[in-house]
Image (tube, rainbow, N blue to C red; front, side, top):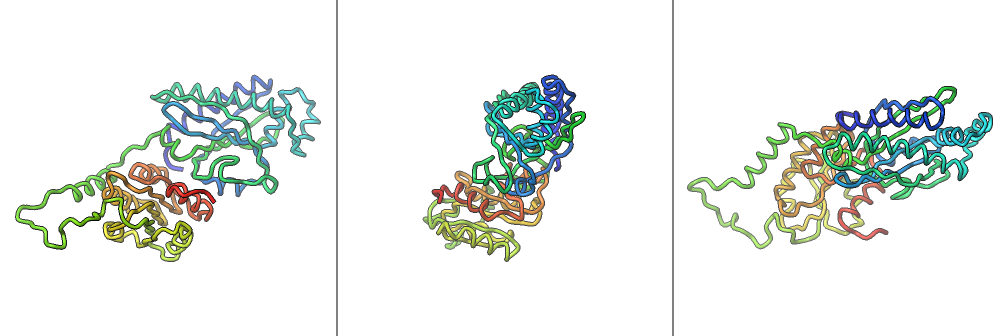
Length: 359
């Protein structure tokens, strides 16, 4: 995953500190080494799980509002909690093999999780320019094919930045600790830099919208103001779908039919003003193969038309880079989707942003 250098460095330092402090608590050498980062989604992450996990939410407050998540292997949690409780090694291996977790294990594991949260607080508070407070929430257990996923559990639907760390302890076969951070919260911790080419596109759009008429120009009858201007939030409730691939565009159109709003569709080169004319656009869906400046320019055009009250924009693409995510959010997208996407994820996001009641 491109970028997020500051966030990566903060997590690397915090997790290293957490390993050292947790090792002292356990009386065993323990290291937590950050090794990789990538963009993922809840559907993709949990779809790839083979074994059970413990998910611990961390509530972020003050200037950085949201929740991030610590995901431990259930077997790792059993090993660490059992060591802390002084359980004999043979019994630890049996509990690990059978994934036996008891109430005492959960309490002991929470002490280890508190060490991790304390290290995160120490590093984040010492690095970030604004005040931050990280509060650990109770753990949630999830076992594939036994427990069910829903919209909020064991963590909310959506797209995440995943930072993976390897746990190592002498004499034990350990797995990974994953830190999952929602994209919007990641961008609060590590704000994007405005790239030169994007700023030029934005300035160009602003010039188009605000440039005064040239001397001698006069508006013909067809250019006179109308009662429902393009930028007004009046007219037929509508959703605009923009996607070059006709098959994928029609798939999106079918998915959002439940809203009963008027659906207006077109390619990424469609005339945005024409699509918005006479309509109260409640949502814009933009689909593409690669999230690049062409899609970003569409975001800018949508926001230029409805400067006072732009509609929510959801962008979907198969290939996302860190720069693309930051650009999309900076220039008007409210949410992103990674292709291939789950139909349920799309429906959930559409309901949320169109403010429709749940089923």
